[in-house]
Length: 260
Image (cartoon, rainbow, N blue to C red; front, top):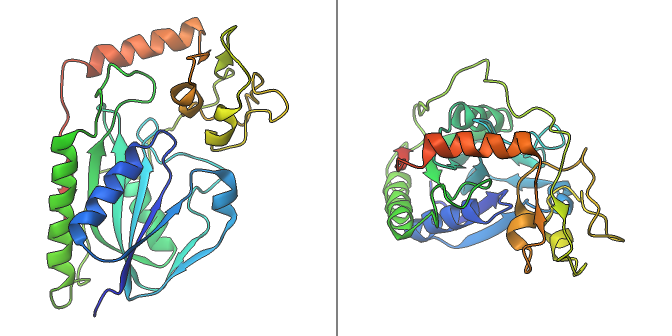
C-alpha cells in the first residue's frame, strides 16, 4: 500500500502538541495537510480518512487523561482501516492512561494504530516545569521517530499486528470540575486576544474580562497569549496544587517514549 498523504490532527491550546506532530511529519517526508481542532468551531467539521492515508493524532495530557471536552474531543474523526500514529504531549509528570485512551478512542472510529509516542512539553500550569520544551533535542527525536514511521510504511504488511502502549483500563479519574477560571487584573486592555485562543469559547466576546467557569478547561491558553500578562489564577488552593506539581517535576527531565 502506498500512503498518498499525511494528515495532522491535533488539539493544542498552548502550541506544544502542534510542534511535536509537525516535527514527526517532517521526518516522514510526505505531503501533509493540517487539521487544528483547538478552536471549538473546527471540531464541528466531520473528517473522514481513507485506508491509503496516514493520520497523526496529537493531544495534550490533562492529569493522565485525554482532555474531556464536549464528551469526545475527536468525535468528528472517522477512518476506514486508516493507519494512525498516536501522540500525547505531557508536562514532565506522567502520561499515565492517556496513550491507551487515545488508542482505544481511535480504534473505535476505524483507525489502525501504527505507532505511538509520549512527548514532553512545557507544563501549562508552570513555565518552570519542562521550560521551553519541546526543545531542540525533543524535536530532533520527533523527526527521527517520523523517519522510523516512514521506514515502516514502506515495508510489507506494515499494519499487521497491534502495538502495545502503557496505561490501565478502567482509566484513572481525570480532572474534576474546578470552580474557578483565569481572571483579568487591572492591566487588561480588553484587546480580545484571549478570545481567539480559547478552545471552548469560555471568554465573553463582549467583555474579555469575563470567563464562563463552566466552560473553562484551565488550559492556560489565555494566560500564555496575553500580551500584558493580565490573566492569572490567584485561588490559593490552585497555587498550592502548582507548588505540589513543581515539587515533583522540577528536579527531573522526562524523556520521550516511542512505540513502533
